[in-house]
Length: 331
Image (cartoon, rainbow, N blue to C red; front, side, top):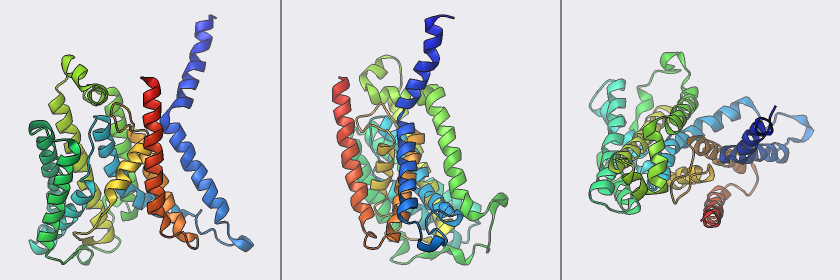
């Protein structure tokens, strides 16, 4: 047996250990272990953090961010940024609620109308970036304002109580409502991971983010790739909105306020480089779980209820600084 043959498994194992997904998973497991220890109940009673109900709660609410983070990570990998997911989520809940309650549409038709918000918002972002050539930050900031403003105009300060018409213990396709969001998140994570790694259009997203000029010279249609990622990002944000309104039972214009930071932070902590060309949808989902555990555990610690925003902001700054330093070392 040759030395090269012996070296191959070792090199593969070394590459595995260097993957960002593995380090992100390690952070998640270490975080869970810390809170399990810190919140350990006195007297051996029921653990307030490590239990099946709380685990499902973390998955359920993290999935709202995670589904949108899959699309946002694709935008970041392509070299762009999307600031509109939170506003798209809010407008989706409003449109779904309006069509379902005010216009008396069927629930499936109302859901399609909500997903249509994602198609239109993503198309507008793509047009501003690709055709008008606005910087992605400015383009998606404008789309964020437009979609959030439309949500307030439609509701006129009210909210739509969708829960009044949803049957109690409703289980589409036999799946309990609480499990829909986690299942959808995992399925989308697997599908888009395979797409990004094994489909030509997915690999082109990395090429565009790594070096747009070189990608253009190799025959990649950069405009189409950018359009695809912005539309996918907005549609997945709209899907998060659909799941959110079905879970919470309300369509409101102020829902998902500030979600943009959490979604971008999840993608970044999962390995997406803000300079483009690197990232992972699996890492983005793991990032949402990291923040989901924080949001769930901190309120159980006396005096730490309002620290989650501070921690999210600090994590984003630290990760971006480290990412930039590593990028400079590789130049």
